[in-house]
Length: 416
Image (cartoon, rainbow, N blue to C red; front, side, top):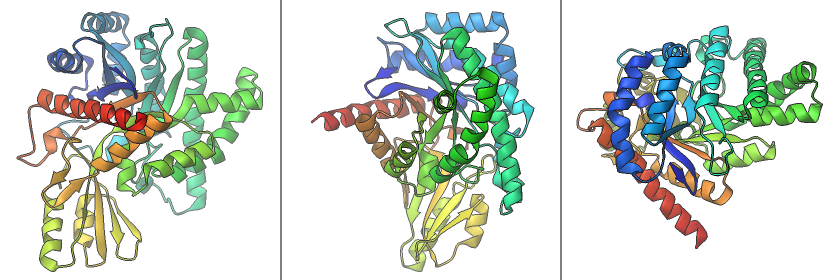
């Protein structure tokens, strides 16, 4: 739905279904009811997640036309897509395989190009008859624990190989824009233990690899000047600002935006999501209570990376909750865990969510308007501890309603 802060919807990776038939059935069951609850008098936006299999099937003309009709008949539109998980994402062990295939592979390139071809057809036009911009979020190139990441030669090789494949998608986006007049962008999503996991790493990759390699490619392929090529790169490759991921790394939202602005880099979309956090008290009993509370969220499906802040301020990174639980000691002052918890809940007993980061990001969006796409992304409903699980439609309703109310409050505060 269109709000003063941008197009707002939720990511359909919350719904199971790796085939298009299964995923479409899940959408048909849930989305019309959500539309009536959340946006009865205006079009309701979706962030569409398609597995590779579903993308191949939806691109078939008869399926794509049928989906377009269904969207129109139900007052729905797609303004962004999630192209991070390639294969199975529910009811199977995902863990680090969420990065497979990574950006070293042609399979990732072809999958992403297919998503953009689909999005170019689905993007609606605004009240002036112009197609709205659309983005596809994607993985942070690869997973660093698969490589000898401390070796400069290994890093350079992986950055070069993955960047070349990203630029193949950039070329496709330039051609699609010329053919369809749709401006679309690939939104890289930094996350813990990704090859790109921080704002600094995103900026360094963009300036050290993407722009230099892109200038060489685009000036040759399209006859652009260096200035035109750099403009095209910055238009078509952006940051996916996943609030949970930056909060896990203790990165303040304003700092992230300032770093991007210093290099004229852009945010493609905000993924509105929350992580778990807690400071450890001084007494042994209290510390153990917090550790046990984190242990309740130790489940086998997804990676739940932990970043610990020590008493001296050092950040220690653990690839998953079991490693953090095993390494816990008296030096740990605070933990933040990559577990996408419901955004409308601030406290989980002795644990808290990073909900305040969401509030700060949306306040900054009201002040700076750094994107026009807001996507609620909580996909862990099936693996939440017992007692936190709720009806799926009701849960999505509560999440989007919470964001709508927060948007309105932020807008009032900013204008006053």
